[in-house]
Length: 140
Ligand code: IDP
Ligand code: MG
Image (cartoon, rainbow, N blue to C red; front, side, top):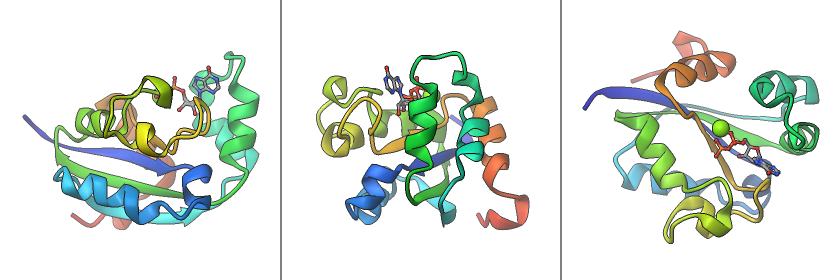
């Protein structure tokens, strides 16, 4: 077990449906602590930079249009094994395949509009956190 931080994004579909509190309560109930958070609207260029790892995928352009289509909440979650724990709470990428009780199963609309983003490794978490936050923004 190790204390980790991970990047979470509440995506435009979930913010539009007023689900910020419902989603954040899932994190808190699971023992994750929100140690930084900000509501922003990304430009398409910012979304493209954030999702650069997917630039060769067929869904990249649509994903970047969607992620810059409305406000999102970017946040840093802290806790024991936060990276994997967050991925478990989120559920599978496609809400239709996500386990019952996960955020994506309960709140996701489609494989693209799937309510939340979460870093998939500790290394990527550090990189993704620094994309949106500096050290002074993170208060443990
Ligand atoms: P993840 O968010 O579960 O880590 P990734 O494969 O990293 O999934 O994909 C990033 C995001 O791209 C997904 O959360 C989803 O919004 C979108 N996405 C992934 N696969 C597809 C697809 O096949 N069609 C449309 N959008 C997709
Ligand atoms: Mg991913």
